[in-house]
Image (cartoon, rainbow, N blue to C red; front, side, top):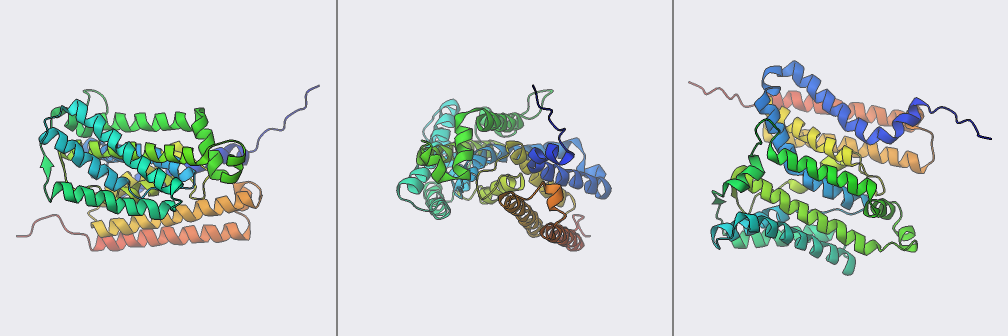
Length: 372
C-alpha cells in the first residue's frame, strides 16, 4: 500500500534555487536599467563581448574559491599567485627560451604548489585561513616584485594571446570557453564526486565530518591546491589578454572573486555552495562594472557600488542561514516575520543608497568629450 504524497508548494519548489534567484534578479535589474539609460552603447556586440571576456578571467578562480569558502576557508592570496605565476611563465618564455606549450603548464603547476603551501600553513601550523593567506599574499607579491624589478614583460607568442583574447571563428572567445569549461568541471566536481560531498560536509560541521572518517585537513589542502592552480590559470589568461605582465598585476582579484562567490549564494559560514550561483555572481559583477564604465562613472564610485552590492548580499544570505538554523518555515513565510520585514527594509535602504550613489557618480562623471 502506497502513501499519497502531498504536492509540493511553490515555496518548496523554489527553495533549492534561492542562491541562483538572487544574482539572476540583479542581472535582470542591470539589463533593464541599462536598457533605459544606455541601450545603444551597452548592448552593442563589442561591449557584450567585453563583458564576457572580463567575466571569463574570474570564472576559474570563482570555481575554486567556491570549494574553499564552502569548507569555511578563505584565500586572499589568489591575486598574488596569478601575478607571480604569470611573471614566472614570462621569464621562462622570454629569458630562458621555453616553449609556450611548456611554460603554461609549468606556471599552473607552480600555482598549485603555492596553493599547497597555503593549505599546509593552515592545516599543519594551525594558522587561521584569513591570516595565513593574507601573509602569503604579501610573500608572493614580494617575490613577484623582486623578480620583475619594475619591468613590464610583454609581447608573447600567439598561443598565449589566444588564451587571453583569441576567438574561434563563429564561436565565443577562447577565454570564455575556458572559463565556462572550468565552471562546468567545478559543478560536476561539487555535485557528482565524493570531494564535493566531503566539502559540504566539512563546511557544515567539521567535527562531525572528522568523526565519520573524512580527513578534514587533507581535503582542505586539496581545495587550496585547486585554488592556487586556478589562480595561476587566471594569471596566464591575464597575461594573454594584455599581452603583458608585471608584478603589480591582479591587485583586486581576491576581493572580486570572493564577492562573486558570496553574491552567488555560497555561505561564508560554510556548508552551502552553489556553482551556478558563483557563475551568475561573476557575470553580475562584470556586467555591473561595465555598466558603470558605460555610464562614465569614475572608478572610485564603481568600488563604492560594488561594496554596497556585496554588503547587501552577505546580509541577505546571513539572514537566510539564521532562518535555517532556527528551523523557521520556508523563506516566503519567513519574510512575513518581524526579522523578515527588517531584512526587507534594510535591503530596500541599501538599494536606495546604491541608486543615490549612481546618481551622484553620474553627476560628477568625467565628460569624455574633449574641450576646445
